[in-house]
Length: 133
Image 1 (cartoon, helix red, strand yellow):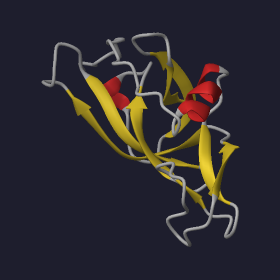
Image 2 (tube, helix red, strand yellow):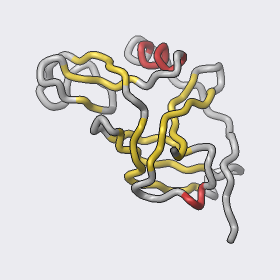
Image 3 (cartoon, rainbow, N blue to C red):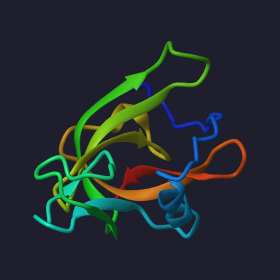
Image 4 (cartoon, rainbow, N blue to C red):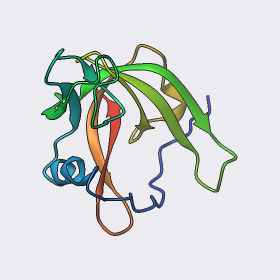
């Protein structure tokens, strides 16, 4: 049976500005942060200044970085290096779009447990991704 091993590929540098600076400061320390509303306490992703549920103020909180694959697709013809893109449902209850790395791409499946890891982008910023547990 053929397999598709993961291969590192160049990652473009992320845009780091006032709205993303705290996020990337945390990733540099090996921490994934998500947003929580200070009024209704709902966690949400994609990070935004106002809560999408009640429009309250938000704060950054640390994620444990564990979850499961909600959906996954392996891109084989998007460039010279195949990669897996997936929606990952974090144990905290939010779902985010990320890459699954350091795995046989053909063995990935819905419901698979994954854990946080980081890959460097151009310029050195660390980008959160996931690998099978």
